[in-house]
Image (cartoon, rainbow, N blue to C red; front, side, top):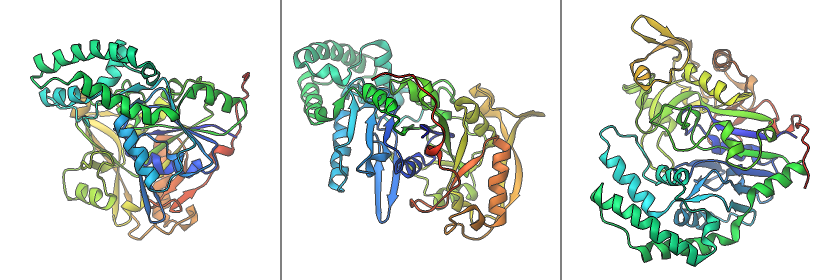
Length: 437
């Protein structure tokens, strides 16, 4: 009974929600370990489409315990709205628990995020949700954790000090109106009272689940190329969506994770600013966007599109020590007669085979393509590798060769059953742990 971390192997939006939902049927616990409501996981079940932002994708299974870990940041008002939306869709929330150590996105964090992005000469492409400022205050030790709101008097005292500092920045640096102390306090406390029944020591809950030998899924947000360290800095998120973040963001050690599954599209997309060597600015890129419905779950922004980038994927393999990959949206390529794949970059006469971390160098990189034959027929009904057209199967096998890990899941549509699964990831061997209750 292996515990599996699910991580994005590109710039996010790879389809982690679908795969987590798929694997969650056999899992006992699903725990979200990073990011905030800047993430968006879409899960399609029959005629119903569920858009999840902070709630783990396992919530659609009533018997699955869903934890929001300490590595996340929570906008209390937005989280309440998400819970209300799911409840209105008939979803049982009784198995949801939120870490008491998770930090809060405060109203001033959102104001600062938007004001700073507007001020920047070189835009980052932030969602404006306050994620970066919230993580910044966490590092600066100005942040509020959920447990800090239990004592209202103490919270109000600290809030007065914090808001005086943040209002000075808003007014004097950005020239935007300051926020009212009582309005902020009441807004945050009202949302906190709604969330209070769900708040718990999720690290302890997870530890006990590990001790009991329960099957655990660690659900990531964003993707490897948006990681604060390993991504295309400064065009990154403010947390650690790589596999190492799964331990830090949930309160357990890395030995709790047995396998790491990377999620990647059969092509490449990116939202926001930053270098993207294989980006297509032509009709082909528009076709990928249109057929793939490449618009952000959270923001609705159109995604930048290109063909599969094996150079970037190899970085994801290294940064996460990936055991295997899930290849998503293979069906989007069904009508292409030829399918280029980025196998290297070049700058002038120099070929670059590994992903460069220097953003200035990356911005100068041009893709080197290998062209594979397309299949020009639908893969949407395929439920095994044998059902795929020979050219589609050859495409899958070539990506395996280029990145160096096996593809164990192939998705050919948004529905749960539009998936080819060649290996039961949660049924693998469990590391022997020496844990006490």
